[in-house]
Length: 264
Image (cartoon, rainbow, N blue to C red; front, side, top):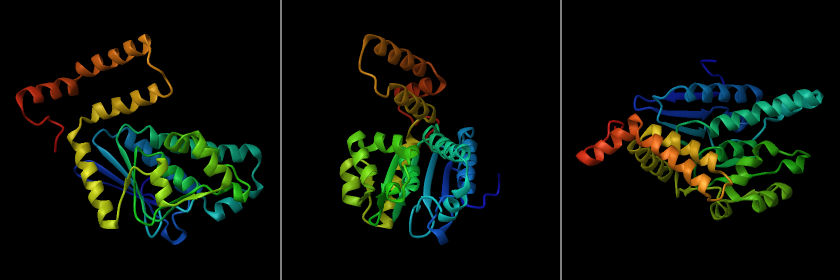
């Protein structure tokens, strides 16, 4: 699925993949085509170890206005099974983004609405510009965007997720920062890029294999409480990491007081 029609994906020589939702005339609203292209892009990145960082952003003035009205209109005659398959494709695309082995950063300028907000929440880190808002308004249109709920719950907890989604609320930037939607708040577009550059530098200081291990391990730990079995499981994973190629290289670099091989 290349070249893409509804998004732009560019991979730099350093290994930074920038994905841009590219439907600015309709505020980057999602269609089945855009969802399919995102799924293809994420699948490609998942099997491209040369990519060290994935950045997701929208073109134009907003991040994403959610589902395209024409897409919704076309689905009016869908059967229940067809609606389910559409929603499953969307849910799996969000999951593919969250499970990428590389660090993922969403740059949100302007509005991120419903499933558009879900895309931003599925990223590891979210940088918000001064005009960013996050809307969860599907209930006002008779919808229930449960596919994005796991990512909202992970960000803000079940009580805030329940409040936002049942009231159809829009979280302004102050609220989004206070409840945990936003990791980094930028004062301007220039500041957004400066924050991104600082975070990218942090990514390139780290072992990509270790980052992938941390992401996988954090998912496995979700909801667990400390126990002897959990301690043994964590120790086993740490030992595996220590004897891996990146683990040995990191230790050698520290002892020899030099940069490890993955540093650019």
